[in-house]
Image (cartoon, rainbow, N blue to C red; front, side, top):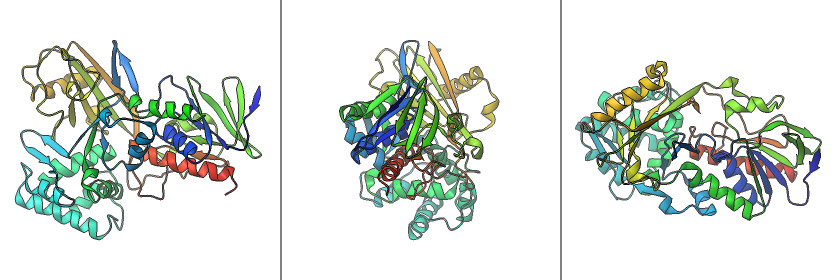
Length: 440
């Protein structure tokens, strides 16, 4: 059966209900179109979604947001996400006992200068080296003349080993999810530009108090529905093709014609849509993220809600009881995050959990045995954000089919595979799709 949905208002099919797809949906309606969103899963969010385990709600990976995420934060405001759904804190890097940096409430750039000058665990040479590098980047408008690895870039600018260990490496891993030896210096500079060269609030950390589906995709779905769009979950699209000036979408036994389509699935999932000539995952290598949740009957807490390690398997521990609205007073839930590839890739889930628990006990020696634990390994969490990474353009072989997703090229400063990168490229795809419908 073929249904044709075409009228004066361009009707855009969006395949994928993650952050990029829902950003595209909201922006399409803002620009005067309407949408039908197809999501294969029953829960919206894609690689940043809610899961349930043993009656408990958690995310399929621990994410934090930056105050520099201007496009995502704008969309969250549009769809009604409350500021109470996340905790905004000044940039804080706490890696006890060796290192502590916290940005004070001062105007930019004084807040970062003061943060570096007052950081615990840095020598004076380290502090001035960091300030010198930020000054160089500002003079070049954060453009790296010839892209290289972050490690090579830092070496070229004579950054001390201790500064790299406590500041630049943790920031690189957190932002790009790529080892510092491989990560793109230009993309890292782009992140620094948005977070450190703008308003003071841009450097803030935003810790979600609600699950990642509630944070944006589900409010976006409600907003889209209220404004005449349609959200279809549990529906996998099997084929996309252009027929004259329409796009044919096949889902289950039904083919529907739309004015345009936006492909917003993960890059490793695009090939399954059989779009001849479209970009697929053969050009990417991927980086994993492992999140390990532990539940304890315990009254103790981490020293801070977000606690880092400069050495070890785990980069960050999060105290979910201190952050999440879904937490209880009787149960301490800690999430341990292991970002990017490394020797730990060879470990089993049980071995990962055992190692993470051992490291956690160095910060909380009196912890009892966990009453439950859950290991979530996302092997395709992000594309490897390297200097030679090939990003697809939003254009496909079909003139009215466009790509979204966190890996797509964008004329703005290229972003790593983050929620903000996903939102930016969804917004871009919405504008391109509607322009193609209107013959622009």
